[in-house]
Length: 125
Image 1 (cartoon, rainbow, N blue to C red):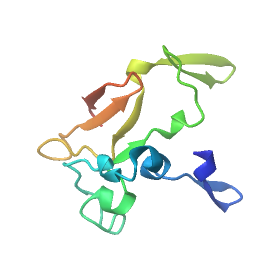
Image 2: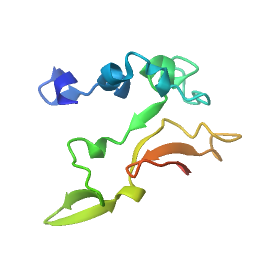
Image 3: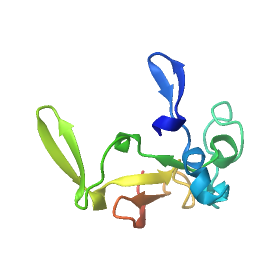
Image 4: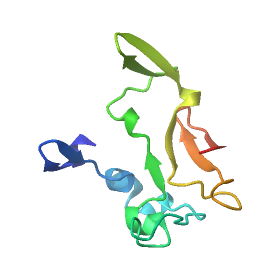
């Protein structure tokens, strides 16, 4: 991400989207970031389209707490205070739907998420 970051102010750096970072590896095929169930249930003033993909170039969000973290076979180690804690790969989602697109309505829907152990599974919001 660092090589693509655009500095906005001295205190804030806007990171690029996943499609921007992965464009070269995907050979420009960023439609892999379009969830067929993508629908905007937020206020149109926040996202001025019917799909997140149209506004964000992706239907998915990246778990930013993983930025600059090294993924080990067993998981990711986070420093919490003076101690370290291991978050297991099977418990860490890396990429997830922006909203619970899947289900009859957003309150009962689920988020499809890619976990650090490389499986995709539905999870509750």
